[in-house]
Length: 138
Image (cartoon, rainbow, N blue to C red):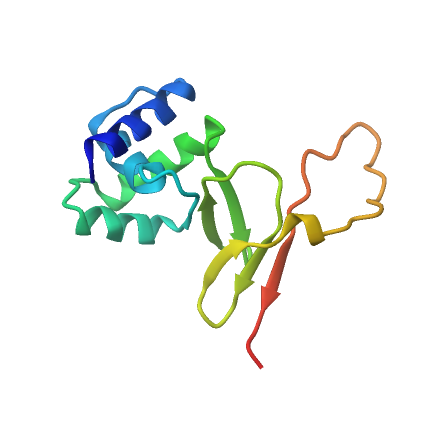
């Protein structure tokens, strides 16, 4: 990584009021250091960290991803009720899930039309709507 990617990662953390520890900066650098959005699993981020020589455990990766989600700088997308992906783009947008590859990518938000949602039960409000479109090669 580069000094600029460290600055980008540190600023990203500070914007979310997260203390920039060595491990958080290392993981944030992998997530946003180049300025691009990405979708990662805890395992894929751990593998990338190992490749880059960052001294972090898988448990630290999980805990850090949770902290990033709680701070609002990551969005968790659950596929199949058990597999979680983490997206650096926290704006509402749909996703494609590529079943054959086990990969998540952004779907074009401007092509999605939701005309009506069911009314929420009394005493609650709809917090968000997650759209994951599953794709399978034919």
